[in-house]
Image (tube, rainbow, N blue to C red; front, side):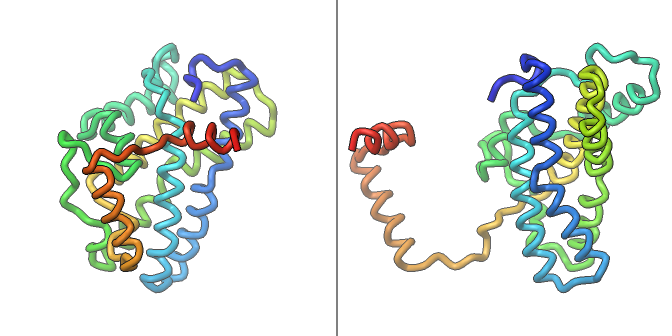
Length: 225
């Protein structure tokens, strides 16, 4: 994806429109409604599966935004002061690098990033619900509504840029709230004998020096048919 700071005003507006309409915000509403109704554990787990996957999707868009979100802002405004406090908190408590966070979203832990000891799937019901309440009340969802309203009003790029930075920092806070927890959406699912057998064949094929194909190579081969 093109680096956010290098986008034209039109590209930037289009990106913001994509961000505020990500599935995460719909999933958050459903999860909050389930919590308000004291829904059964099974229902909460099913919706959290969607919420977590949508959270990972939102994170994809921020992978190229590596700048200091406070850079260039007036340090004396109330918003900048608030963002600085939040960024100081994030940087003081974050335990992962950008590379480690990107790999986590793909379900991979680097050797430098051991799995967190807390497993969401093993939390007692009261702790599980408390975590979900913490997640659905994150500031990200308030800032998203503000950004949506500003896009509808067609305000200046300068104003959108400031609120985008607030949006980004609030995403980092959500990311930090999940950092100490390990969550594998496939954990506990049964693997069919057929699928397990197929995995075994693929593993043996690779060990024997068999070739794998990239998506690009597959597309080229299909185009030639």
